[in-house]
Image (cartoon, rainbow, N blue to C red; front, side, top):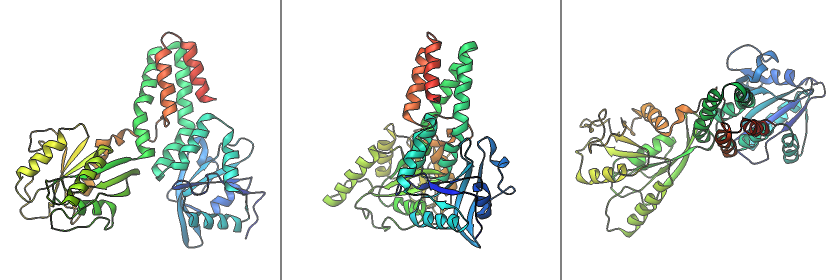
Length: 398
């Protein structure tokens, strides 16, 4: 064991909250301590310079030859008190092993955890406090990286807008509108989306659901009507948290239990952000399938039409490139839920449908509903009262 120089490690996220845990290693020996157990994915060793200007390093925390966790490392904004923040997965077992490792290398573990989190984050800038609250609920590493970048990018952008209010109102308006437009994508990145799989019985919805989830979560059977209830599971697609719902196949049934399941699926669909309409491309497009397709596409819910069973010799979907077979211009993709063909295309098209391509992690972005509401109020008054608009923005920066 090597002694660190008055180095302390604090857990900044409340116990039992979120998928991400934030550990702050404080003291003049903090960076040296973290560098001993941190193995960057790329680039050289961990130094103060490589963490300047809000830069983030990605890598692993190791104990000898064993990897304890994949983490992100960033410099903490604590003037006069050097500190490094380590963003790890929030499982209690991983967290305890990380704390024991830092303690072994000479750091003092400071407790209690919940009191520390409240104390450390209660002061400072409003944006920093909002980032902390968002980090508590962050569900993916992509979300953490996004939030960390906002520590520097969002205040810098707000300062630019304040300057523009005095000499270039049109440019200030453009920048505020850009921030407001990007909020929905940031919310998707942080909060995720709900996506329901719908379609006629025996189209392969449950097999596709299991393929996306990566395990057998839904019952799979060639018998139509097997799915008697909707099943949900949480997945992550390119860093975006998504709750998938596998609904019972839509059809008229004499089975009361099956009809109850179908009705429950309709209710789940109403709460969704988007739909995957799954159709069997290996059989002729039936009247029943056409009716279901028309019904689904007649609504306003964003929908991706998924032609399943591309592994079958008789696979002959509708006009995949030209729209659905019912004349509706909807995005199509062909897949095989059985062998995984086309799944990358499905993920790309689904994320595009949700608008995630606009969640640009390198740009300044609003990430709370309060920030978005404040930005809208600035937009309303800036033309008639630039001084009031500036005061509102400065309160965001306080």
